Image (cartoon, rainbow, N blue to C red; front, side):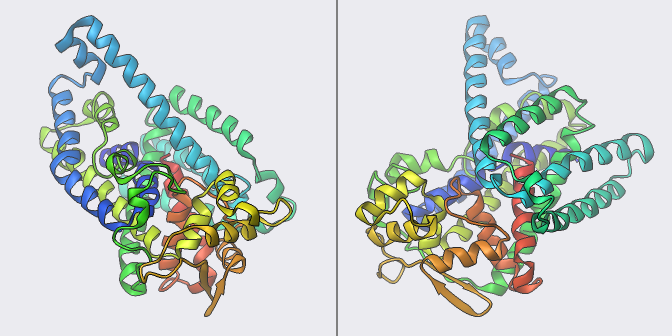
Length: 422
């Protein structure tokens, strides 16, 4: 469980958001940075920080800074860590809110992970101590039922409005949950929920590898696009250097992991020989997640990719005179894509296309078909990258597990496990 808890703590939405947003620059820079960064820097940093903290009886980053730099230095580092943590948590919360807003399926499925985690914690603590396999099976079955139940909730005209929350309501819900998670014993909620998230993540990643092999998707993005040298990219503003290394942190090299690898995790490590598996191993799995996320972004139609990851203001600016306040979000997104100077891997202007049920849709119909397959009312816009990952992976999994009818389930199972740890 400790590996799962640590992996969930360091991963969250970070390894998904960065590579997906950076895909606008092409796939080659991201692949090189993720692989080289994690091997020579990211995983090494995580393991060393975990080892150093464990050797000092689980002292936190701030406490170790005080030991080495004195009281003033320790205070400066501690304040810096609080600020960085607040920024990171705000970003991850924003990604989760963007993906869950106006989605009763997502809200119900994610909400159910809380009582499921409580049940797992009590089962492991009181009913069957040490029976990790039994606890895992219990959590897995209940989570699958929760995801399947989310589809029933979304299609029920009476229950769907109850679980349809806007961004402000979701912010309040996240604040309440954060307080509860901090106040309750770690074994009761945080550890089993993180473990549940990791179980779903690693299990789904294994299925995704098979799905990618079976689907054999075609890369739609050039190795290096014109946006790599421009600072006006639609998903984020900034050229390849230095913004690639800022955009992709989790999955390659993240200083935030130093805080996670000190304090809590070292206190729960039983043996020193577990440190390499937990510290280095967790970071390698996170890097693998980042590569999978990149594959999801570069194998869907570029028009669909940009439509999901551009904000309403960016869509309006890109569409220019073709933008209409009375038109649908899908129509305006298509107008914006048509006005953008971005080519696909074959050197042609990128298109907006989606294949469903053997039929290839184009333009606004493609965006509507993608949303329909995912069990959502719309996917425009769903900024932050997380929805792009879920839609791309569900598109792979449906190729050999359940077909078109199962895509909505896979979309929400992937997004649920991702939001569990956000």
